[in-house]
Image (cartoon, rainbow, N blue to C red; front, side, top):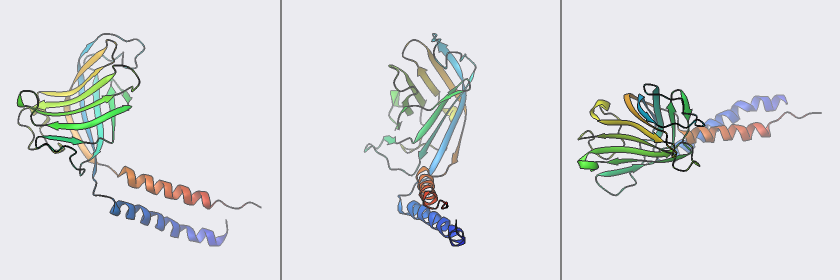
Length: 210
């Protein structure tokens, strides 16, 4: 690589950050937040020797984390129901984590069963396995102020709070959350744009061989 090219690299780096910044500013407002719920398995049924979660027992730790844009608009026109995209999630039982292959939206319903507040996310951890399904749920009464994305709330106020899982064969789990936290995380789009820029720039600036 010549001296001239070496000196120009900071300019391209600055341009890369400018591109990422412009991308972020041009895009609609977005605040990416990771929500994490931790708890334990309170019941299990059946066996499935070939399943990665077969060794999970009552009392084992579990957790569920998901990332979503809390500034996104409500997809529902109902005044009592909200529908929001979930970007990604991780479901863990007994220390074995899986990224759901099929992840549905978050549904916030203020007129659920018997007039309860319900927050649910349906998912299929293994995707291609018939009947394989898990359901994140928070169900209680008068715990949510509106049908927006729940952020600050008292977890203990929800009588049902956990993830129910069934493998579609005969094994299933019931869990209950005992703690909840959240944190702002970097925008997936901005990081991808920045990484792509530097990858393209680096591929063009390979040293010449003689």
